[in-house]
Length: 532
Image (cartoon, one colour):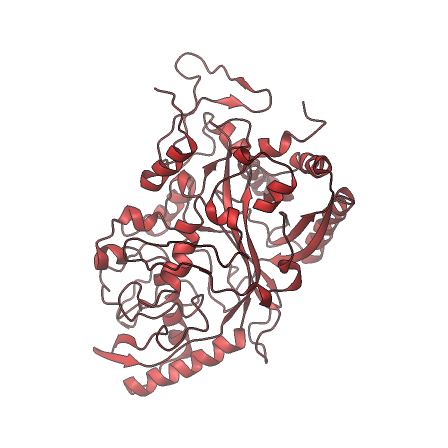
């Protein structure tokens, strides 16, 4: 076994190629002393390339105790509050003191697992608390530059629409500026301000009364309001909740089951997929390095990690989607000479039916997997269209089949989604643009090469994965011109190929957003004046 260290530049170079392989000395961040684990076992290993992690592995516990929750796995609570803060005190010591205060309440990855077990055994609910900082937040705290994460998108900030990015190579187009096609001038007022921090409070399970959840969260909110008085302004409090269908499964506002294809990092979650439907066609596991990066401000370069977060408030046009789906269904029906229901038309846009099963235009195909599938039997996109949402954002080998891109490269662009719904629960509103949508959150280790590749290199790219595919009808560039929209929906139905002219548009509006970093808990605790 060997110990070695990498410079920051070497770290990122290696991560881009292979997620890196690191062997770390196990250190207790509470007393900064090496733990004595006995002969040949006093060193803890964590590899960025390692997948199927065991949360109960004693050698990894120090890493999981220093990593915030909601990164390796969703916090799982049914209600949440997102608090967006701007530090206002000219004395950065006061701002750091508040970071120290909240540090003792932050939920670690290990604690998140333990509270989940406790809930299963006793029914006891537990508050989840998380904290993220923007680049301006680190600066407002007076953190030395070498202790601030160096992801270029994170440092530029989401409102900087002039910053240049490159979402190539490998068949992915290059967009030089404003990769998200957002105009911050159209955002809601709070998000036009300088956002320094995002605190997440979450509480409650599916069966808990919503009022009880809200009361508990509001109590903690009032506590934070008192703590930050004279230190920070709370610019906005966004309320989120888990939206579910009649089966109790999580859905989004267009009515489709959500989060199915999220990468999994723990061995137990991988095994559940294996037992449920197998993993021979698609491996849902992901390496630690897909979302984890060393926290340069943590107590140890060997055991302190964090993750970059992308936040976007996405308002959904529910009536618009329902109406356009009816129009699309009518066009398909006319082309094939029989009635095609709205369910199939909507599923073609998403790539899944509302119950989460893979869309297919073959009525004889009875096997409809949730996650154990690829497109080897649909290489021309005639069953699940190339422009469908799930195929755009998770090509499952299309880049290899069409452009000879190694699968390892394609899979390295995945993100871990941690969003939650907000607003009205009405899935059949009488008007467009109701106050309803998604508080989108995603974790990744490289914003440009993960989120931005997925959003602007794939979803917004009319020539991904083949020329003339068009943009993603759900989250792609919503106001794309005719040259970017899908010219044709090429489908195979009733034994013949059909071509449909139709363009989904104006289904999602971005109401605000920012890039954040969730630092290690040890970073936050070093500002706790009561910590020893």
